[in-house]
Image 1 (spheres, rainbow, N blue to C red):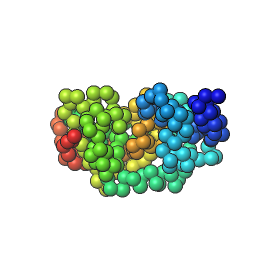
Image 2 (cartoon, rainbow, N blue to C red):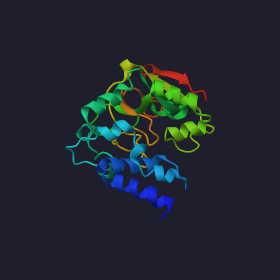
Image 3 (tube, helix red, strand yellow):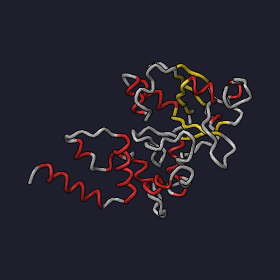
Image 4 (tube, rainbow, N blue to C red):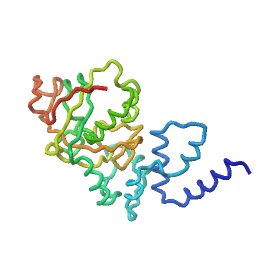
Length: 238
């Protein structure tokens, strides 16, 4: 028997015994966020360790929802995260935003449309995805290039190339409606979103409400009134 078979088979058998949500989440994290290499990392990728630990433990045992069924339900049809995530998990996840949250904006898009994405049916506010400010700051200190930051945050290749981008920091008192994303929000990436409040790279994310009056040139009353925008501007230096 080859070394590969001797190692891979026990790991595969162990993975088969894990709860379905852990196996599916593991596959989603690999599919959407990890570069595959034909070396020993293939063996490691058979383990569920690439799913962030809190999420492994946070899936409710009394739910019929699985990660695949939530994704497959499609935008505007996905369930509330409270229906498949433990309350303790949700509280721990949102606790990562206690020092505030930050969003990266393309300046032209921000000025044209304001800081919120399209309104979700049934909501009275627009929304935006955010990262914990302190964790984003730490990540920006670790990356060596804009391309590395874009990859870590699940942004399209070349997102920072030639673009005028900026940060917008939202203080703890500006995190209206802070919640785990359901995948129904405006701005949800249909190819990369996974349930649980993490990017495939393991970076936590959440959603906040943006007042409908926080508009831009193209969706307001013909005036760019940034005094109605929550948050504060900060230059992005990499």
